[in-house]
Image 1 (cartoon, helix red, strand yellow):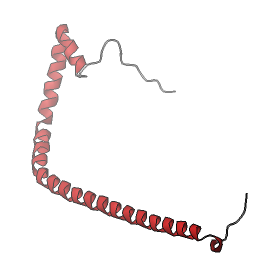
Image 2 (cartoon, one colour):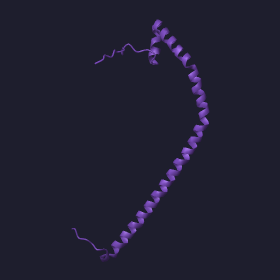
Image 3 (cartoon, helix red, strand yellow):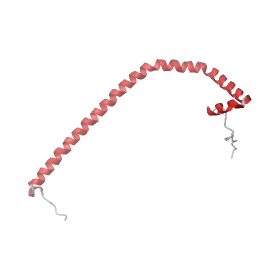
Image 4 (cartoon, helix red, strand yellow):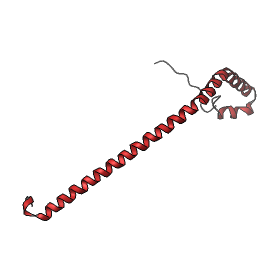
Length: 114
């Protein structure tokens, strides 16, 4: 059961080992080719994405600056909506939907220092 077969005793065994070595070599070469292809593809995609990002950056900066300029007006409008909702109960579901007021099912809980 634990008999050791010497390499000189079987020429067929030597051929099998040589075939396995060739197969392993080919598989390793295929793995290297696939890996190199994947690395090249990812590098290419990164270059394309960085160009796209550079092209979109000025427009995005312009939108962000516009939002920052209008932030106070947006907050004022939100406060006006909440005050309107307090005087008109039919408008409160809309405010709850967008999270501007809390729903009556989940009242605010006071946190206690322990």
